[in-house]
Length: 200
Image (tube, rainbow, N blue to C red; front, side, top):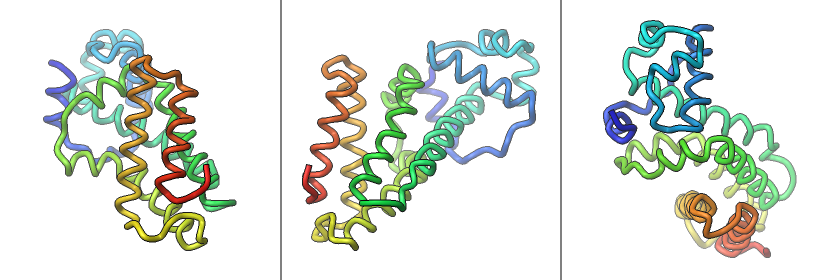
C-alpha cells in the first residue's frame, strides 16, 4: 500500500516509547524509508535482523509503523530545537537557530520527508503534526515582539503560519534542485526577517 493511503488512514498521536526490539525496528525503518520511502516491511525487517512477524508484533500495521517513524522524526527535530537555547539571546538569532535545527532534520531524511509533504492531509492532521514546532516558534516570536525586535502589528498566529509556510517553500526549492541548500536557507532567513520587521 502506498504511503499516501497509509498516512490518510493513521492517526497522528504520539506513541509511547517502544520496547527495545521495537526501537531497533524503528531505527531500521528510519534507515530504509529514509533512502527509499516505498520500502516494504520485509526490507525493514531484514535491516533490523528480525522477521516480518516480529515487526507486526510491535507495529500491527504498516500504517502504525509509518506513524511511529513520523513521531520519531518530530521528536528528533524538537530535541534539536530545544538544544538550540531558544530562550537565550536576541529572538531573531534564536529563530535562526530553530530553523537550522529543522533544516538538519530535513537533510537527514530528505526523500522520506519530501514524500510525506507531497501527501495532502486535513487541516487538523497538519496542525497536530506541526504542534510541537509551532509552540516553539510562537514562544520565540512573542519574545521578539515583547522586546521590540519584531513588528507587533501582525498577529502572532499569522507570523507562525508564515514561518512554517516559507520553511516548506525553502525545503521544496532545495529538494527540487532549483536552489542549493545554502541559497534556500539564505532566502528563507532574509524573507522571514523582513516579514517579522527585523533587519536582515
